[in-house]
Length: 206
Length: 382
Image (tube, rainbow over all chains, first blue to last red):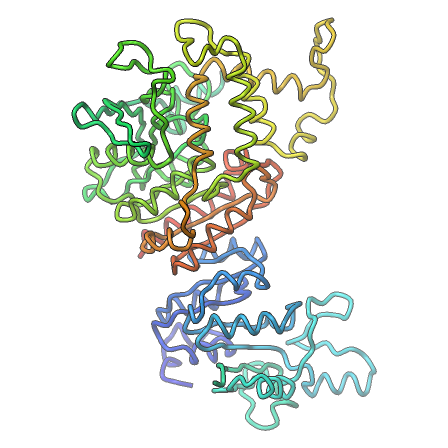
């Protein structure tokens, strides 16, 4: 982690956000897809002076973004991206929303078009505790990063860290940096087994 | 009678006063988009709150088709407050403790500004159809004179719904140096065929009334039947299926006259009541001129919306639409948002839940207040 970790404000931020914030140089332009309540964007705007905007479909979340003074469009990610020109932003963030997108490939392609660099964070489906639950109890796993029951989940895609790395290779997306987390710890060994979350900084390979 | 009591008690804004600003005296008449000249011009306007020393806290509110300069508070002797009283006042969305709020009646109107019912200085009779065609841009150009006369170089915000929203967009792209932020609500960057169609039916209702007399009815009752009918059609488009069902259901009217085809249902009575009331305060020719200006409104002007919005790249936008508004559907707001994004303009967009249809922009003030307050706070903090 870089020197920013020393600041008082910075210490209370959850590790997942810190990791993403450290990937973004101060003053960058950032689009957060599925920005939720706008808390990550708010941190980026206030602590890293980014020019930030978000896309969020949920009206309540959009209301909260407004309270935080975040510039947000109440739109669906699938379709909303076509409004932006090529490389409109230094960074596009797709954090914890990729697994819920119906036309994922189309959205990823659009995301890569709109952003110079793209930050993608998602829950690792084959985290060891998930494997454990599946293998020994024969149940669909429920973990802190994938907390929903099978009958009540917004998630459509269940992928592993290895799946994503393989996908990037196939699509010629260059992985600039990958950080793996298990709650508040950074995982360095066997992330596909021990990490609950993968955060990737990628850009087009050519 | 309660509102009067409220005004007398000093609640809300209390009593407000209409002012007049006259300009464009010959030979400096206002050059209209049509190429014709108009002058002298009077704009009726009201102001609320205090202009700060640097004159940087002014907000211009722009009214819709049948609106006027009286946006909030009470005029002496009137029972009802201004048309956006829930939005403009102490601590409200447009907080008059912080901001200096201006609202002016458009040119072509009949609520104190120069319009077809005004006296033509060349003939000393009402203009009637001698009044030139005006456009949304002409309305805005006239307002720039008012704003300058108040010593204001740059407005903190221009805001309005429906036709007011069109003026907001026009302000932002034609006079971006005078606009810090823009809040277009329930509006479009160009009128659609369906929207034109409804307005044309309204105009035909007026013009087919024998009392219209080619607009030459001043001094007589005028085309009251036609204008009332135009208003009835308008009101249908301002509501939604759901809001009508909630408001009227299939309830039968009380005190029905014993006459065939007199109104049975409450909704029929309501529409007639709204139509009959409208003719007491609105001039039929103004209705023709203003609806024409709305129909001709097309910000793209043959170009693309993105290119047009590039002129407004320094303006911050908050765009709002309502889910049940079928007269100005959300897709039209999204076209504005899209153009902003393509032109790299800072834009926020929200699509508010409401069953009120197009009228929501006048009624759903709590939700609008949340977004407007926070937006203005963000801009003021910057």
